[in-house]
Amino acid sequence: MSKSPRSGAPKARNAQSRKGGSRKDSSPKRNFSAKRDGRDGRDHYENRGNRKDGASGVRPNRRDQSTRSAPAPVAVEPIVREHKPTSATFTSPVSVLPVMVEMNGWDDYALLDMGHGQKLERYGKYTVIRPEAQAMGAPRLPESEWKSADAIFTGDIEEEGPGRWKFATQVDEIWQMKYGPATFNGQFMSFRHVGVFPEQAAHWDWVGQQIKKADRPLKILNLFGYTGLASLLPAALGAHVTHVDASKKAIGWARENQELSGLEDKPIRWICDDAMKFVEREVRRGNTYDGIILDPPKYGRGPNGEVWDFFESVPHMLACVRKLLSPNAQFLLMSSYAIRASFLSSHELMRECLDGLPGTIESGELAIRELNGPRLLSTSLFSRWSAPDNNKTEGA
Ligand SMILES: C[S@@+](CC[C@H](N)C(=O)[O-])C[C@H]1O[C@@H](n2cnc3c(N)ncnc32)[C@H](O)[C@@H]1O
Image 1: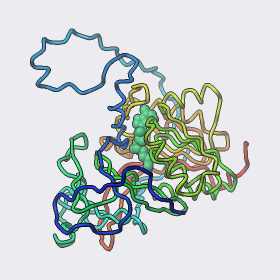
Image 2: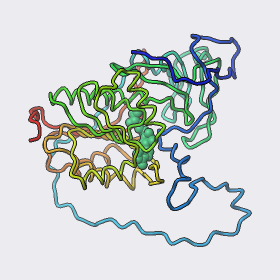
Image 3: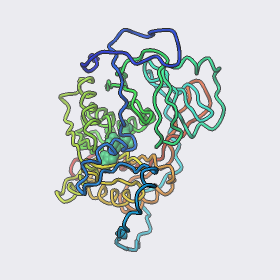
Image 4: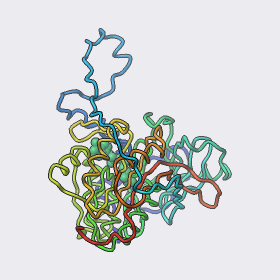
């Protein structure tokens, strides 16, 4: 089911780098004011004014700093971790690695080409060029294909950099795409994203397989859920989903996607909260889930300025998540864009946390296969645990 885009003053984005007037269709267009999206939790820089300690969170401008006197020394709290030697030999779950998971694209997404630090992709009706550090080779397609892209994100080589979109012609602020039963809005966001991480489709399918394998209505927790696809697709298969994200904007977008998909009647709890605080609270409440998905950023902020730092936070997060797995849990999936980690480190951490469980842990890289081409683009790491095949009894 496809509904019209959000209401609001319909205007067009400026054509900036190419003549040729309006292409595509005549659907509503709006002036675009790029806002930070949440892929790496960066939208939370905007929220830092809410921090309870009163700190603005805005990164200091070096020039300003040079005119001020040196700041007073601040006592740095050491990070104290409980030192608990593990005696376990980790004989279970069974380990499978490395696993290379390929996402081959679908009707509304294709990796058309890559090279020279950029990728050429199609998101529904738009072709876009975005920076891509992993695209180290040379492009395959002729330059004319790249020149006919609708939008290019430039000036942001480092992910933290202040890049921006340039549009070759008038484009819609919001357009729709589909994946299976889900219809969702695309939008050109700052920090190069468009509201969907297409490589995740391989994980959505895997979660779908787990739901089918369990053959019972699973209770699923989706942490760092962003625009909701990893919540909507399980819900469409009969799961009861709790979706947690720190960004109100992302939750609003996810709810719009739910409506667009005609899945309003599906049981999804939308929770705007810090993921860590939420799981800690759930542990105290004794709640459990049959499946847990977490796709944390490298760095992010909770709604009240809570800091998420992948390397600092993920061990405690996984320890809590372990306690949240129901006695008859079906799966746990963690993907990671923190590329300084290796899938092996992620695997070993997962093994340590899930020690004693039956089933299998697989770890590896998630990659996108280019359309009509032989190459794979590495996007992220993952570790995923699944219960043995006979795990069907509810509430065991
Ligand atoms: C990597 S994206 C998740 C992508 C999503 N799984 C998908 O495939 O569409 C990161 C998300 O984490 C959220 N986030 C960042 N820090 C957070 C925190 N401390 N607690 C909860 N969510 C957080 C951001 O708002 C953003 O939506």
